Length: 195
Image (cartoon, rainbow, N blue to C red; front, side, top):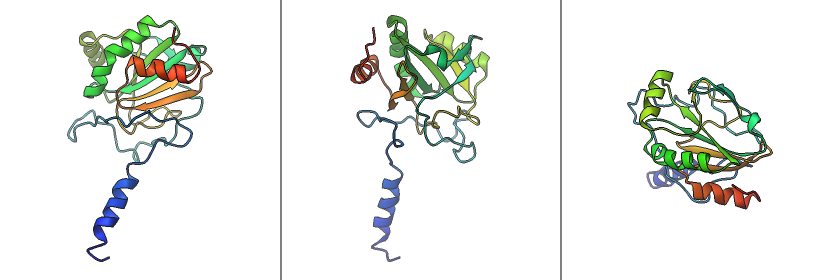
């Protein structure tokens, strides 16, 4: 390869790495920044290839796990409501910024539920101590980053949020921080009400 073609080849590789969300999964309305774990962070998510990463979220994802509060969480039991599934981590600055807004949305809207999926290697006691300092009204589930939920695509960045419609189907996907206004707008665009 000649030296003059090298920059073109590198540009093509960089652009290929900036792909859009998977087909059939609605994307956020505007590009949003991605939070990344520091390279030396012990809680960083493992290499996707080593963890059996999932490439595409199911049209009607299922998820069951035990929340940090000890209660069982089953996504299917929330049918009939809008559910905000938020992948986040304690080391993610944008995740921490959106938590109060998601908590208020969960507490103030009877037809909208939020669940936080902590995508990191953290012990339940550590998470409870973290939540004492950063309380939220919605349930938090700690995910094993080496065994992520099979029905959700492995997050390409954090926070990663899915809006699940009352029928259980993915209505919208957001990469980067979201606020209540964006969630309510997405619900309205999907023909629902957030009341």
